[in-house]
Length: 280
Ligand code: AFP
Image 1: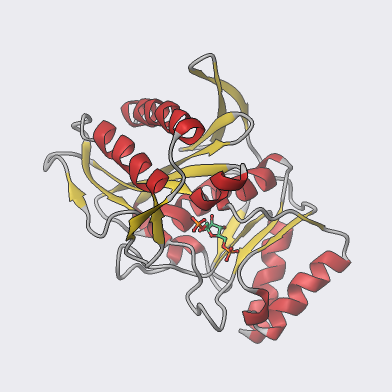
Image 2 (image 1 turned 135 degrees about the vertical axis):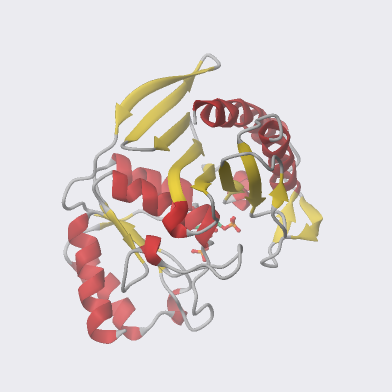
């Protein structure tokens, strides 16, 4: 696994430079979910794929920015699903963005995930690695240094409500309003990586991207966004659900499938499960 972590470190240093100097314009292409790709998306994807190609233990990769699985080494043991630059549209307004990696054995599905890594490109570059626990590293003078282990509290005070509010189910809107009425603070940038990183580092809260009338299956992709963060949150003593069950029990039928998702500390997630069980 260390060869993969080192590769992610190397790719992240190159992506940092790309963000600082690269062309943030739209490309002429769309990804498989119909999102117009930015030149940064494609360039970040190339950086990561080129580095992963040098690692014999990687069997195959799948990127949010590519339609199909890319087979690398038939005798490899790891499968990696990644979003090379999530929230890339935020670079133009100088907000934090991130890369997300899910590391799987044997199959691209929730029950096969064995580790996750994400990298936040913000005022500082930080990498969070979840294997048996959750460890955070910070880029200092070209090297990633260990900073801390991350553990969520039972309850937090941040609320990050995603998706188009006028498409929320009435019971979901009531849940979000009730949480704010309990004094939670709104923390939502539109970038899942910094938004989820903040809740982890501030000890807890709730990030939600529910199914809505315009997107019944939500927007966030299972293999390279939801499952890696679900793995991270569970290893940090929190939870991740689809409203009714663990996110890591969601079935994948296509590599670009999405799912409604909620990530947070136990108190908040248990509240989501109770409301969805009653209304869903
Ligand atoms: P982009 O990658 O298209 O900028 O979308 C970012 C994202 O996938 C995720 O990072 C955010 O949590 C989510 O979309 C925000 O979506 P809404 O703008 O619909 O809340």
